[in-house]
Length: 68
Image 1 (cartoon, rainbow, N blue to C red):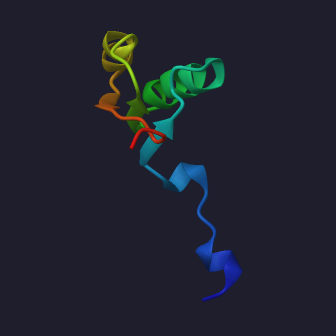
Image 2 (image 1 turned 180 degrees about the vertical axis):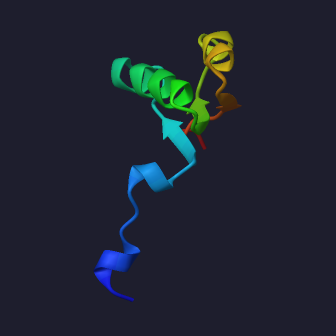
């Protein structure tokens, strides 16, 4: 497969998962992707922003990448 064929542009992606969604960059990115019509799933540790993400249309999964 050629590299050119393997590259995927974000316009071609419809399902996006975001880790770090409660940080300043992640929050803005989540909101803008939801507004643009993408299917967004956010992964975060607490319930603090769950209502906000759901109001934007994102699915919320609680999890911690560092917790064993």
